[in-house]
Image (cartoon, rainbow, N blue to C red; front, side):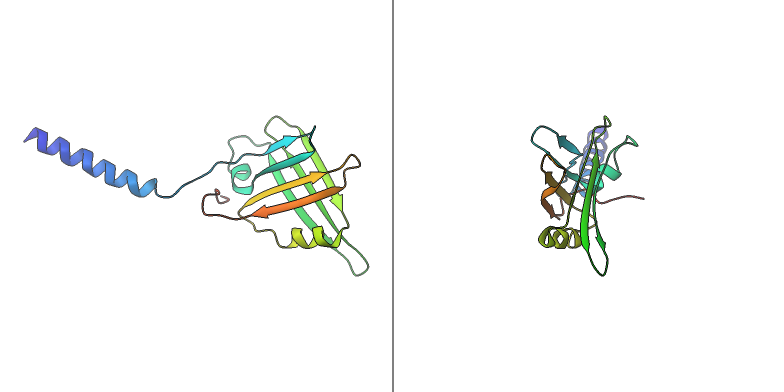
Length: 129
């Protein structure tokens, strides 16, 4: 009798745990490589991190006469980096970025963005309030 109850409890916990653990999940915190001049990370991982330091972002600044994009990053130990661009293709790439996804940007020695990439996937952590 006790063995049947123990087996039922274990099966119940396994089933409940299976629902909570469904799907591949990836925690992708902010990573900055100042030597190779790139930064990357998941927006949700940065927002949901236990520290109150890290962030990663890019935004477009659109005016009638000009368009530019800016990217900023800070990792959990306080290292920062940023870049800007007026390249129309990179500004367009920033405008296409998704709220819940992954972001990578690269810059040159003058802090001009040379690459801006983003992606979405079910395995990236969504942002929480």
